[in-house]
Amino acid sequence: MIFQPPRLVPIGGMRTPEGLPQAEARLELGPAVRVRFAPSPTGYPHVGNIRTALFNWLFARHGRGVFILRIEDTDVARKVEGAVEAIMAGLKWLGLDWDEGPFLQSQRLDIYEKHARWLVDNNHAYYCWCSPQRLEAMREEQVRRKQPPGYDRHCRDLSDKEKAERAASGVRPVVRFKTPLEGQMVFTDLIRGEVAFDNSTLDDFVMLKSDGYPTYHLANVVDDHLMRISHVMRADEWLSSTPRHKLMYQAFGWELPQFAHLPMILGPDRSKLSKRHGATSITEYQEQGYIPEAMFNFLALLGWSLDDKTELMSREQIIESFTIERISKTAAIFNREKLDWMNGAYLRQMSSGEYAARVLPFMEKHLPASAARPLDAAYLAKVIPLVQERARTLAEVPSLTDFFFGGDLVYETALLTSRTMDAAKAVEALKSAAAVLGPPENWNETKLEELLRAEAVRLNFSNRDYFGVLRVAVTGRTASPPLVPVMVVLGREQCLERVKSALRKLGVTA
RNA sequence: GGCGCAUUCGUCUAGCGGCCUAGGACGCGUCCCUCUCAAGGACGAGAUCAGGGGUUCGAAUCCCCUAUGCGCUACCA
Picture 1 (cartoon, chains in turn red, blue):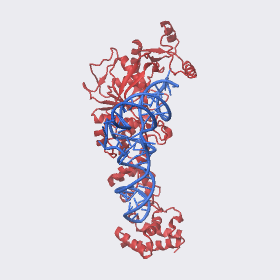
Picture 2 (picture 1 turned 60 degrees about the vertical axis):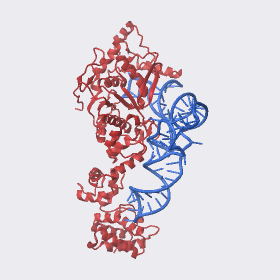
Picture 3 (picture 1 turned 30 degrees about the vertical axis):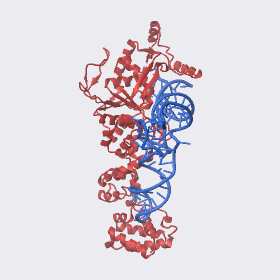
Picture 4 (picture 1 turned 90 degrees about the vertical axis):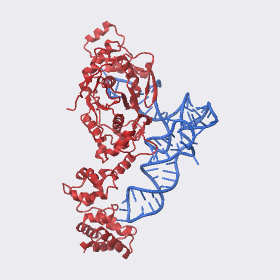
């Protein structure tokens, strides 16, 4: 159901050889910018993958072009169940909408097979029957002799008789590309400039596997051409594959797209991002209470910048100013602390209504069972604004506010006392507070604040000490939003109850 | 090992020959505000621009070498 072929019509004028499917385009003249995000569903999408998607999307939106989603599911063995769904969910979460696709390469096998056969028929590729064992032994030997590993081209020059024999053996061959033995592949990368590779360092790579599936190289090149991709924007790890791809474009007689290899995103240990680096999947960030606006902004700044100072930018502003020219060349380490800060900054600038709506799912899920479900929306609306500027992620909010919902507070009695406040003084302070909290007519913020401050002065307590014990008694903790507003939300009954409970902890029974 | 790419504060980055005694942000420290925690404000520490050679009147910026890091080197992507 996820495969929705766009309405494509063939166009003329391409230099595709006869007998092959012709390139397609949405209209006679497609937009100049056509880019794609082409993940392989071998795992859940991490921030590096998503950053690549984001840059492609930004480039498309900036240039009023087309953003295509293509799933490169050509590795049957490594395919992970649910990965495609996770990829799409991640894109949707960040608001990266695609204009065409998702295309599934596994449903286009005949296309790649045709192209591979065309290359064989036209002497650009050949069948190879070498067994995995032979290849393995060959590699070991090469490593042992300190030679660069690579296919020894054993099947490249088989006689017709030998080919016929092997074909008759029933062993399913792979198709290998016939890499020129000499010469150089030079191409211009939009980010790195001119890059050159000697063909002699390239071996005859496999394009079509024996199971009939294409390798990345074949499927990627064929699809990029067929889908009329104008700019191939992908992670830096693909840079050294680009000469192979150019060779294929040349063999097919196709026009080369532009290339832009993005700097990698590294883990804290400076290595390629992987499962070992904690929350790698983008969906985990969502669960941890990061909001898409912040993630979008943060990711955009990982390898791209607007100028020397602007950090917080709207999605529109980023689209407007996004250019390849301003993408940096150097790999970046994913800095969680800065994301936390940025997420907090986005959370703080949100309207309280919007904020409450975003927090609600986290409250429903993480608040203790003592909070009756469904949660009281009106009560929540009073509680949540008290922590809006205090949380860096939405996931922190339940634990910051749980004392608003619990019945009995659980805390160490020692919290009620301090260096400047022994048990006797704590009792004195709490008793005086209880007297203030008693009369219902005292229950508004200004009055309570005024009276409590007066009590602190009268009993010769610092505000810090006086409000401190009261805070522990009422919230069960030493840090909280401003006490008086907290108490007003909590209500008279609850507060008195808790002050009494604190006094009991201190040995006061009356 | 071979090939390729990269190299500015701990981290993200600005810088594309003189505006740089290198700017911003996160984090960190101090102070202010303050009932605590945050938020906010002020100030500060932190980079001999990987090292060495050139080119130039002048280099973080251009060239070369070295070092280091990363990537690729699969019938993985």
